[in-house]
Length: 300
Image (cartoon, rainbow, N blue to C red):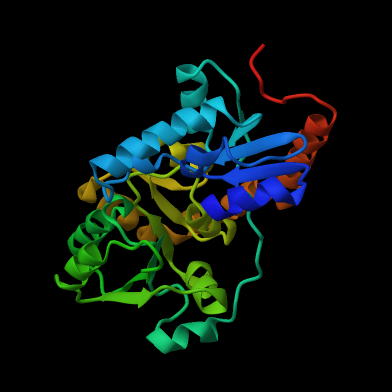
């Protein structure tokens, strides 16, 4: 971020867009003709992986996020509401978008010896304690089914000690695929009997959007950020409550026709509300207003 900020001062850019609040510690440094836009994708200081110093710096970055950029946006409606209550307005809600994909061929599952509709899937991305994987594994044990639980993740910024802790426990029936991309990754979403998203903290998760976009029956933790996306098109469970998660999984697996109908409903809503075309149009309008001298979202 430091190098990019320095380079921006010589680049003659019209607008600079900063993604994430933490880089806003340097939001005073970039120079552009019409100003800076910053987008919040969450509050890093909420995550358990960071120490006291890192969390305090992230809290400071949030204050700079609210103070310096000409225009502020946020991908999460509950977080947007939080900013506007605490800091007296000025943040515009613009959700994440998603590319609607055709289901990859089920042959992609063969490397893990999986069958379409014959496994439970969780996409964790970077694996850390706030992802709710301990809750999921405990619920899976309580469920007592032969169906495998597949967990994809382990990318950059993974808490390796926690990951090793998970893999060192009772892993019977659990497949850890590691970090995946491309068709083999999306085939797991598309062909799962149920997609589970047990995270304890998110802003707006791309993983949750991806599960819903394939029409796969989705069980998700009932944090406000997830409810803002999935209410009425998935099955919420009480966050960190493995017994409730087990009951929701049992309901979905025992009622496939109902769950598949819910999945089709989810696919339609995600297509309607999270189109990249619509989201790009919103940012285009913001950029054009900035070029005209306006500051969208500024409190009156």
